[in-house]
Amino acid sequence: MPIFEYVCGRCGEQFEALILRADDKALCPKCGCDQARKLASGFAVGGGGPGLDGPGLASSGCGGGGFS
Image 1: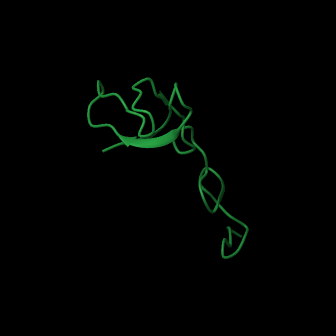
Image 2: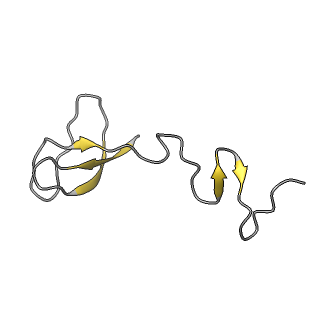
């Protein structure tokens, strides 16, 4: 089940929410507002993630090794 990151349109609180159905709205845990905006996560936009220099590339840092 997808967990998404949101920012509240009223108070600016950033939070995560588990959304079970497409028509569910994320409620801000701080103020209860239902006008939260979904944030783009690094994974969703194709970021390399920890230990990677880019998509599918091993890090040359500690233990990365790489390919010869």
